[in-house]
Image (tube, rainbow, N blue to C red; front, side, top):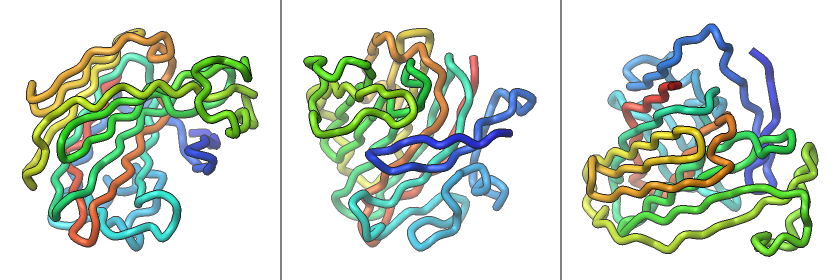
Amino acid sequence: MRRILMGCGGLLAAAWTVAAAEPETLHLDFEKEQDAKRFTTPVPNKNTELRDGMLWTHGSSGGKYPPMVYLPVEGTDMDISFRYRHLGGGGWIWFFVDGDDGFGSVDHMLRVKLLRNGVQLQVDAHTLDPDHPMRQKAGRPADKVSGAYRLNEHLPLEKADLGKNEWHTLKLAFRQDTVDITLDDGLWKKALKRANFNAAKRKLLWMQNGGAEGIELDDIRVERR
């Protein structure tokens, strides 16, 4: 394996690329401590631990962002899925897929924000043009490695009833420049086609605002196609 550095909202996080010899399917059911070692985020920590066969994240990070866990991946066409459950009221999960930015670095590619009343998507592409019309945060500097600027495409909130504290399953199927996103086998679904989706995926990130009661993650699956 080799180590790389990847940016997240101005922060740098260390990650490990997955060697080609490793299995093409990764399944984490959190029944064993070894599953937690797949994350680049040290687990257990003050916010996250394995509990009753689930990955439980609660409380506040004390910083700008809610608690996060990072999982390295390696592939272009792939299926990604996981289950999650809120244990308290309110809150949300923001799920990120990070990948190659097309200019030599790694950054956000797709964000799926799972609110209690719906789903909101954000696509992050990249450019070397500092005056590109989709560059919404003019004060954000270019990537230190690639010199690319992040382009932010915010899609409107789409309504879905996620208010109950029950298990929900999110699935993403990346095929070339298209991703099919499905929540609870059809409660909500969306297909997007963007050129940057054809780039290699490098990291998954769960940003979790679950309050004191927290959020449980389970049955994470990543399969290269």
